[in-house]
Each structure stands twice: as structure tokens, then as C-alpha cells.
Amino acid sequence: MMNGHMQLEHARTLRRMHHGQSPLLLPNAWDAGSARLFVQRGFAAVATTSGGVAWSLGYQDGEQVPLDEVLAAVARMARVCSVPLSVDFEGGYGATPAAVGTSVRAVIEAGAAGVNIEDGTPGHGPLRPLDEAAARIAAARDAATASGVALVINARVDLWLHEVPLADASARMDEGLRRARAYLAAGADCIYPIGLRDRVELASLVKALGAPVNVAAGPGVPPLGELARLGVARVSTATRFATLALGAVDQAVAELRSSGRFDGLASAFTYADAQALYTT
Figure (cartoon, rainbow, N blue to C red):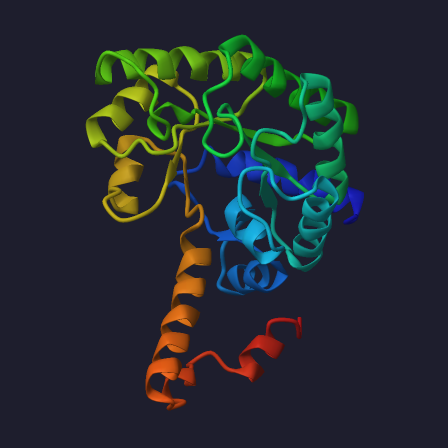
């Protein structure tokens, strides 16, 4: 576990970053190396990607990784991060709200300054009933309060990610707002409508909530400057960097297999660069 005073400061700092003049840009790491690289590149905070972490540990995404392995990975990333670390904690790693509270206490002990908790069930399953989802957020907040760490809770609303049968976009927005408000009332600090990209709808959500909103970066998402004008407080990269890394290796492997040549193994990022990540 990191130094207790440092973790307290990291949580306070992360909270302030959600209320700055420009959106908090969070790259999502999947191991200690990627986390350290993001720190060295000057990011003010780092998040994890549950998908990237799962793949690096030999599992599929969707709470398939045993909790103790997740906690060990978080601890490794926290050890090399001199900035706040927010953890994609999926549904909270617990069958009940009480179990979520126990798991959240454990991830705080591993070094988390923030967590994501989603209202979908593992593996892109159906959304949880609203009362149950809100109770899980409340349990996470109670656990954080008991720990003395002002954990930043980013409540993910999965309506725009899952195929939820609703009449139209207006009905989806109404239900999204209903869920978001319930999560804020339960103790969430930020709302994450993952999958929502429409500029008009984003602006409407931000204005209606009056609370920090997180957007997932990716192709087709408005650029950072425009998101700032829409009032978005936080932008995260989700699995994008992890899949980019795997994609680059996959392409090099394909070229090697097809040509028998090693030219594709050239990289501007060298062994010395990797070693240098840990010199300070």
C-alpha cells in the first residue's frame, strides 16, 4: 500500500481535477509499464482499464479476473504512479452492496484514489435495477468514508452501451438522467454515460445534471476543445491504448510471419527508453 498521507492527497487532488477550467484527460493503463509511461508523459492522473488489465492477466473482461489479482495489479500501478490513480472497478466486485463495500475498501488499500462502478452486469449483461445499482454506489461511498480516503466515485450509466429497449432517444435520456441523479444522491462524484457521443445530448445531460460528466474518447467523439465547451469534466480513453498496443504487435507479427523479415520489429521506443521510465 502507498503512503497513507500521499493517498489522501491524491484523492483530494483527483476530486479537484473534476472542477477545473478544462476537462481532466485520463489515459487508461493496463499494467505498471503503461501507467509509468503515462506519468512520464505528463498526465496529471492515470486510470486503469478493466479490459486491458484482464487481458494482461490472461482473462476476458467482465469481472472474470479474481479480485486478488486485480488488487495486485492495482498495487503495482499505484507503486509507480506519482499521480492519482483511478481504478476501473467494473460492477464493484461484489454480489451484494455489502460485498461491494468490502471490495472497495480493499482497492483503496491497494492505492486507488478513485473508482468506476458501472450499473450494467458483468459481460455487457442487462442493467441492474436502479435501487440495487444506487445501493452499490452508497456502499462504496460508505466504505470510502470509513477508510478516511475521499474516494472519487465515477458512476457509469450503461444505457448508451447496452441494447436497452426504450422508445426513443428522449426516453433513453430521461432514464439516463433518472439513474444519474440517483447515483449522485447515493454518493457518486461524476457520471459516466459510456457510449454517449452526440453533442446535443451530451450538452443536455451536462446542463441537466450540474455535476461532472465523463466521456469515453475514441473515433467519432468530439475533440477535447469541443467537449470542454460542452461542459464535460472528464475524458478517459477506456481500452483504446491497450488495443492500440496489441494491434501494433499483431501487425508486426503478421508481417514477420508473411515475409520472414525482421524490419517490422524496429521501434522508436527502445529498451533504453523502457528502462528510463524507472530511473526517477
